[in-house]
Image 1 (cartoon, rainbow, N blue to C red):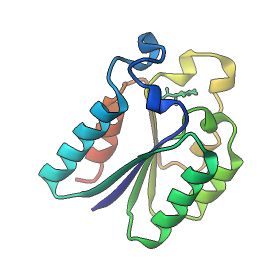
Image 2 (cartoon, rainbow, N blue to C red):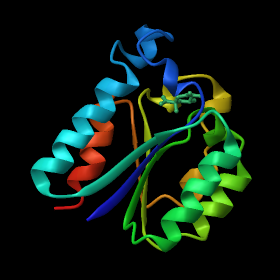
Image 3 (cartoon, protein in one colour):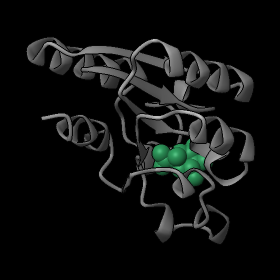
Image 4 (cartoon, rainbow, N blue to C red):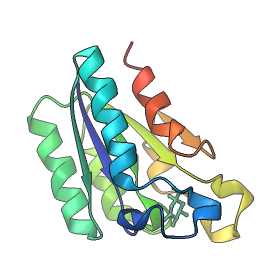
Length: 140
Ligand code: DQA
């Protein structure tokens, strides 16, 4: 299987940024665990973080053409604002799983709506970094 894991804005600050909400693990900790899991299962996985909407869109476009079967995406704040990321995902034919570290429904009202959920095949929220690993478990 070929998988793309996308992390949106500010997730490069994981471990330092509101750890009571987002946990003490760094993004490298999370990605390294995903790379390990992929190696054990023989999956081809790429993890990418960007603070720039257009770079996330470019990565989704590349995934349309390179055999990617599954995109696991935490769009972070773009979840709640980005029609452009929704449109890019709508142009991708594979599976899409939306992941949030926190339970967005337990938080401020503006986090309750997700543009990306209009396309996602599944949504995982509130399980911390385990959510990414659980998203990969759907490949079995
Ligand atoms: C988040 C939730 C978003 O509302 C927020 O803007 C983030 C992270 C999460 O993983 O819980 O940056 O996507």
